[in-house]
Length: 238
Image 1: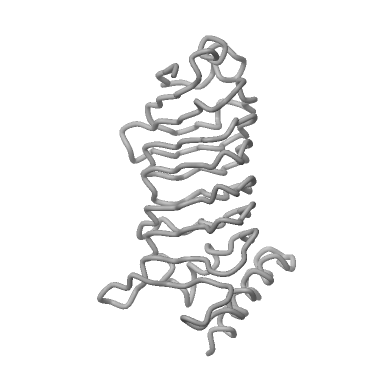
Image 2: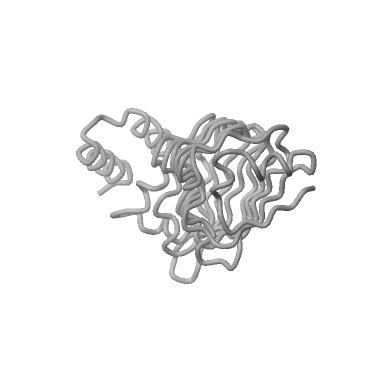
């Protein structure tokens, strides 16, 4: 079966599972198959750093991308594309402004340990960067809202740095992140005001936490409704 046929069969399976036509996914995958071809790729994914068993460990987006469709990489981690589970490093290119929901899901089986996000990024969908094995993550300044499960299930993560002025944190946004680590440091030091927290379960089942916040906001942040309910926290003013 050709590459195109295999990927199109996965699209069909995805549509059947969700009960709706995933035109965003179809479009994104078509971009991949249209551009696939090694050095002649104009838009797609290029794989490199192959191991002795023939599995690639690095994936790079090439061509002009402005958004990554929902479940784009997650879908490729199943069935005939299990090699995606061996990817340890992914660079999301400059120019991308949005990452859809569930893009990195299923990428923790073997260890996606490094994700580079572009400075142009402004939006991350629900579950957008969940279920990867990275130990640290830097989120660009254009991202100011944390959606449902957007950074959840990063089990090995020890530090998340938000370079933007975070204004809201949704439920389960960072749930279970750092669960396999001894502690989790979350850097909110670029905030100019206390973000709205939907409820304390945004940090459910996380380990001991260190919240870095601006010194000028420290006392207000610690006593703000909903943030008071977040437990096992060491507050650090910077």
